[in-house]
Structure formats: structure tokens, C-alpha cells
Image (tube, rainbow, N blue to C red; front, side, top):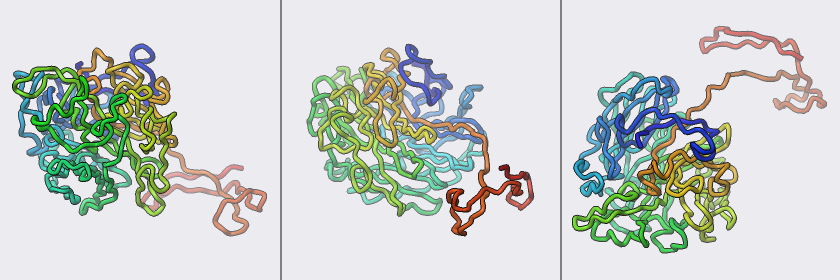
Length: 482
């Protein structure tokens, strides 16, 4: 399919084009190639879009280190904004892209991870996956000729320094949050897997979350309760062990990437995990081994997790402390009763696929929805779209596909089937009118609290209210009504 970046309203549900309209295409594969990360610039009404390393599918004209910009109104073609120096070294096999054998180990380790824009619109941040560094650009112009700063994202204490793989970025309350995993590639021991989130204030990285990734999860496929299908696994693309990942006629080996972060209204953190192995296999691409040209089908095993904010500014993982586990036999897609999930609604059918998330999350505060990329969101096989998860109950597309999902990539359009063909989500908030209000009253008991009027706390009409700017100059005035 030629669409690369699409836009649609947050109210879209059902299947396009049958139930509802399809998205608007803002740019194409020919213009930007394979991309993942997005960042929305509300100041200049444009989207930043970063190149991404995925087997079987080429980089765009700017290469594997490119960041593009596209106007959100689609009024002009995308433009090259900047290059992330030294982000990509491994070439695709352009002569045999359906096999692309030499690119098997590059996904997750090269090109660009997350993007995030500072709240004032002045700085764009990007993760260089190859060097594991945070790169920042002046975002005020149409282009940026070179980074204004590059800093190392510190190893949080992985079993081996080479096992640290940062990826996701998000800005919240004027701080940049950086997420990554210890991928256990050097040890191949599951107990060495963990997720880490830093808060970065421009000078130092402070660890705000460390979470082992050793617990049991829902099965990637049907009744397959094999250890590999129900857990995160160490990163591994060794051809010597390639067949160990095969379950029947599909390839299953969930390997975690902390690809995206979102923050809810109360400051809790939603984490989107991508299955890195799905960027190594595909849906019909050829086996990478020289003596084998069999087609391979991968089944993604991503996830959505919640880290609930505490009153003291810390985080509790789902199913611990006061952060609830919402998974029950009725809500969790038939997964094992020992699995704890805040968002159990990322499933297809009852017991078919217990984990359908593809790794990208966003939060819509006005609707209290967490949006996630999903495969088979409206129960049409080998399709893609978005799932909408209730931030209070955790229920999502699996619980009510017609009401909680939007499919906009059909089986015919989906070159990656269930192997994760969607990238990042960027949410454009509506510009609501700004109002200041809304009551002046007589504080009869002098406690600074607005009590019921019957307690001698009557409203005060005709009180003059002045609005001042930052220099103390009066810019508006009014009087209270009755």
C-alpha cells in the first residue's frame, strides 16, 4: 500500500470502508519510506516522522537517519527536516527485498527510535538506536542542519552494557521521559529482562521506573501455552536457533522494545511494548537462511502496561500496590488466571490471540481513552488499526470490537498481516476556547473553601475582576453577575 502517514478523527470506530470513512493519507511510502516515530508540532501544525529499521522494506529517500516533516493539513509534500548522525550502517538488499537476509540483526539496533517535541516547540528529541544517544535539534525552523546536542542515555545496570536498548520518548510536565529495555541478548536469560524509564531535565537522567519483564503474559497464539509464547524473551536473531521460534506454521518469539509512553490525567504512565522480532520476520517474507527460501509468517506479541502514579510521585506496576489488575476470564481473552493486566482488552477472540498490541500508545484526556495500535482490531483476520482502551476499566477492542476499535488496513492492504505493520500514534488535541472563571463568594467562616451557600457563603455580584498579562498590564475586565 502506498499510504505511509494517515490522519483520522478520534471518534472513528468500525471497519473502513464498510462501516465508516477511511483515513486521509498525508504522505506515501515513496516519499518517506519505512518510518515509525511521530511527534506532533502544535505550533507549526506539522508532524515529525522518523526513519525506522525493518526487514523487507526500504528506507525512504533520506536514508535510515532521516527525520521528515509533513503539514497536518496535507497541503504540501513531506520535507527532509534533519539527519541523526551515525544512526544507520547496514544496507537493505534492494535486489532481493523479499529476503533481505543481511538485515536480520538490524531492527531495534539501528536507525531512529522515539521522537518527542518540547512543550514550547523549541526542541525536537530523537533516540539514535545505534549509538544509544539522545539527539536534540532546534525545532523552530523548517530544517535543522545539525544536532544542537547529543548525550549518552546511561546504561541502567543491564547484565551487559551492550544489552541496554533505549527507544521510547515522551514529554510530560516539561520533562522528557526516555524508555528502554535491558534485552538480555548477551546472557539469553529471561531474568535479565527489564524495562527502565528515565526522566531527563536537560542535565541529568533520573530513574523513575524499573520493572522486570519476567512475568507470564497472555499467549500469542491460541492454546499455545509454550513458555516462549507466554513470556517476553531475550533478543535473539541467531540463525543457528531460528527454527526454535517456529510454532506450527508461524514464527513466535516476543522480544520487548519499550517503543512508546503516554501519561494519563492523573500522571500515571502507560507503556507501549513492541515485539521487536516482528521487525525481523513478516507475513510472507522469505526465510533469511541462504539454503532456505520458504515464506514465513510472524505473529506479534506486543503489550500495553500501566504504571500507576502514587501520591508521593512514584509508580506502581499493574497488579501491585494500588494499581489494579483488571484481568478476569470475561475480560482477558481466555488467558491464564495468573496473568495480571491493567489493560486486558488487547485480545482477538476468546483464546485466539491474548496479546494483539503493536507497541504504540497515546492518551486522549477528554475521552479518557488510551489508543493503541492493534492487529485484527475488529476481528477481521490479518488486518490492522487502532484499539481504544478505557483508562478506568482497562477494557478494549477484544471486549467490544465494534465499539472499541477502528480497522483502516484491510487484509489485502496489509503486507505485514499479524506481524505488526503499524508505526507510532501522535494525538492532536483540539484547541478549545480558553475561559477563566468562575465564582466570587463571601467566605463566611474564613476557611478558604467554597462551602454550600446555606452556610453564609453567598455569591457576590458586581465584583470587578481584572485580567493582567505577565507584565501586570490590564488586558480585560468584567464584573460578576448574580
